[in-house]
Length: 414
Ligand SMILES: Cc1cc2nc3c(=O)[nH]c(=O)nc-3n(C[C@H](O)[C@H](O)[C@H](O)COP(=O)(O)OP(=O)(O)OC[C@H]3O[C@@H](n4cnc5c(N)ncnc54)[C@H](O)[C@@H]3O)c2cc1C
Image: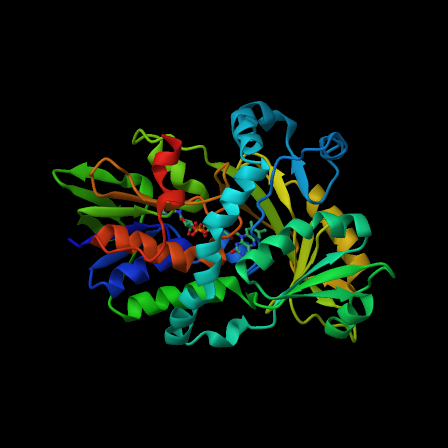
């Protein structure tokens, strides 16, 4: 089978790239070893953020460094044996943690955040999945004054970029979320423009079905079989080889498995994360995602129950699960909301594919070989996948991007 483009990876990023290329009239094959939306794009918190202009930075205060070094926090845990291997990446994260670099991140992420829901909406409408979208914002909760002060930077960027929010005291918070337990002194930021979904997996699958319904080919195959035959890239699909002059790499946490042997060296680290669903105790209900900003976990209503997600775990991508972090998160979450029984026997675990400047690579390879990159979406790939999907389709077709692509260029790591 000979086509125009092969997209490797059927998470939110790959499926969106395939849909946008298809919309330009290209013949596209979407390749995955599993069905669509089974990995990171399934396990996330499902928030399409309009806020979030402040990246996760390297802690600057000694007290915070010592706190995380104890390795008991819900927000961040690590496997001590991976830290030596991770040191160069952490050094780059530290360099990207200055006020100036945080400002660069805010400016660079703003076009992605601003267009995120506008890019989801036509996919969701055409895929008939709007019922999964909730247009009622999300809440960042601070139980102490100190924590709230740390959140001020997010507010100042929100003002710069015209993002709508309300500051809530405890009473106003309880009016929005009556089942939440908050300290007398609690404060919250209600980010009104955020949208969340009730099943990230169902959304990705619906987008993939839309792609197939419009004539696209979904091919089961191993991306690592990619090789050159003359001017073409070839993949060994389950039902035979497929060839195209262009390939988009959207393999999320697995992108470097393919790219390193091809000679590309990008500093992609994996921040693992966990989720588990719970029933709500009788009479309790949750209307939207709530983040406990000081402890570092989130709860959100999903079709399978209330989904609890953890912060970051630095560990080998393929190492067995370590349930310490989700166990601690569960304990903290039960103090916030009346969680009932766990729905699954064990938590889900996956990896956020993260570059040290917290921005994805959305770019041609630069080698004029028909290879394109769309990976490294870290904490924002579910929301912003459809935006970077459009941008990569612009590159493939020579179209004029409607945003400045420089912050996402592969060249920044060369
Ligand atoms: C706990 C948690 C919470 C999060 N919350 C949010 C949130 O609220 N909002 C948000 O925007 N983002 C969130 N994220 C981040 C978001 O989930 C990711 O940025 C996004 O899912 C990355 O999508 P992707 O398509 O790049 O990767 P993936 O969804 O992982 O897709 C990669 C695909 O590549 C395929 N693949 C891998 N290797 C091969 C191979 N050899 N051959 C064939 N196929 C292969 C996989 O099967 C998979 O389908 C969260 C992440 C986590 C872990």
